[in-house]
Image (cartoon, rainbow, N blue to C red; front, side):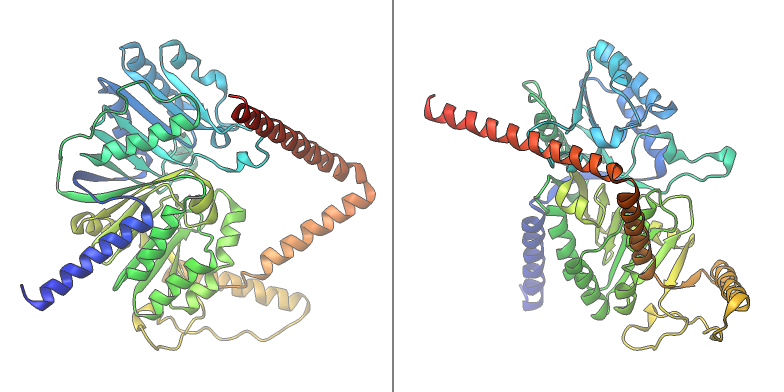
Length: 480
């Protein structure tokens, strides 16, 4: 065995150990993986799998909406439950708030199915409601599993009658031993919301179904397994790291890791929504573009209705797909589930899809012409437009409007857009909100006082209940 081979083998083993420890998830071989793009492909595959279930169905999703799509899933689940299949569903209380009510599940419960709502507000846990079950998981009979960013709602399909295209989202279908890991993660969520699953569920791991090795990273509040893995991949990437995220709000350590990779010559790219269903998050995301661009990271905004995918692909070998966004809520607060796939074939598929997505995206530039130093392929060759002269009054506003129009037209033609002033907008919005609250407090003090009183009452009751529960547990320990 030559020295170079032994050195390469040692590096691979060291990388596998580092990834396993950072994610808290072992590498599982013998799997088959299919890439699913957008909601219609997901719904067709999910419904077909449920309709073919013979033993059990586990469904865990952040949003299950009472609409045409949600009712189609409900009807399919009811039919399976009536046929004797064990059907278990977990829906998140916060995600389903205003989307579906308790009565939506009556038919499934009447058919023998089981439904649990994750983490509704309860006394004794003042901040407990912050943690959400953000997973999107389906497993059938222990041999087929799905995970993605897709919720069960017709919103993901767009609206052809109004010219609204479908949301852009990504997921996978899995077969093989990794499905058992997904079902164990579901069993943990089920136990968190009530009694454990019946004896014998979930079943033993399925037999080998392919040659793909992967990790199932099922995170819980305060575990940060996905955060550690994202940091590790940013540190280990050598050539490329292409990220897609729906609600990117980069924290300083992760932004520094991405910046360090870009400065070392790694081709780091970030694709985010151009228009978001949560405008406030989009504003926070844009306010963090500048340090990324200065480090040489390429930032793109999707031109479709909504980009909801959460993916990463690195060095043509490693890929991640799942429910975790690149923000604190996903990393530290929510229950999430992702799959990290170590397979060149799948990584090539995801990279090809990424390049196709960039054809429908606009690149954000720090300035029209950048100095070319370091990795030149990260710099735009767009010509610098003439700098407008300062002008006052209506002529200045007209010039500014003309410049915005020119930038918009230029972005449409070149698929590039110069980064504007992203920091002052959130500051101005914050100042406006503070001013409104101040004026309301002066003119109508009761409008401010009553909500504060209700918040105070909520914390008072919860702290009292927590004290009482702790006291009861101590008494049971002293006098068994």
